[in-house]
Length: 469
Image (cartoon, rainbow, N blue to C red; front, top):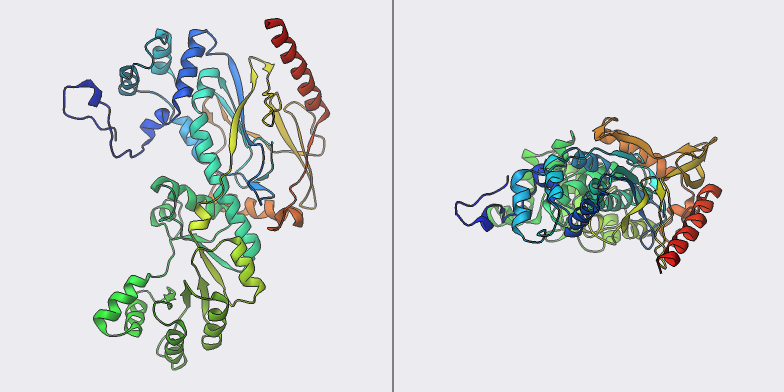
């Protein structure tokens, strides 16, 4: 909740030093220049002009052949809660930054909420460079201010969902993949989004209790070295630690690499073979996972073997190639961190006028666009980037209207639906696009109409610049 200090000085009246986030404060979670630009638009009398912004990536992260779109659910929840209260407006006014802003700007914030339309590809859809994941069509001031939050949620969740999909593709359908990244995610909020995106991208379960329960899932996990060390010290041996934990959680795998992995497996094998213990699984978190997993398998042939410890898709591929006897993987640090998805949010149309950015290496295509996908027997044949009103023919338009006049018109999809779409999306891609080694992304065709609009917009922009001189 918003914190108000019990002092007279106004500068302390809107403070929350812990910086915990709640929906009430969504509107202020933006970059300053979004608000200063909105104030400028208001001063110029153009704040209500209809604007269209599209969110896309210019290029994929290095080593990626595709992205799995994710984060739409949080984006729509944010837009539905977008509004400014009197305390927030007063706090902005006290900064002095907006001293010259028009009075109309403050009444705009006081009265305003998001009233625009949102077009988006469904979560779990494979997309490529220059294809919009989302388009906002709204009054200019609204479409501008929401940029920062939208980029934050879609960029991060798309990264995690894509990593999860790649992990699933490499590990195979039978492998058990568990999300263990909460302690390594960039914030408590990020850990929740990471858990959701990982599950939606193809992982089986998460250790994050809050995320799992709020998503209607069961959390999963094993045990830590601390328990083994504590009970070994207090109760006499590592085996006593295993027996104690197994008594209370008989279905949970045991972590067996605290001291001597093979020795621990040998002692457990005796108990299993004698019928003293019904063991479901063990986890290896260190050492030579290829060699250790083979030795453990020889001792415990019917037991599920999990591996963890800074694993990623490349390491899993190496382990499989070297014949490691591993049935499941715990994924943490390298799943929830790594090379960012560098999505951008660019104006493509203002008051019905197509616009484009012409900077070297950063040009954008003008106009409101649609992705037209051609699938044959579930396999992706081609993608075409065109204008929204183009005839799709037999192609499937990917961007759907999900919010109209600030009201969500399609219900939020459940996790299983998104997970299934992710799996189908990856399965539809060519093998060279899914490869970890030098992946070849799908080439996105540019429609003739979009190409013509681009050239027309370039000429008009150049002419306007020349006339202005």
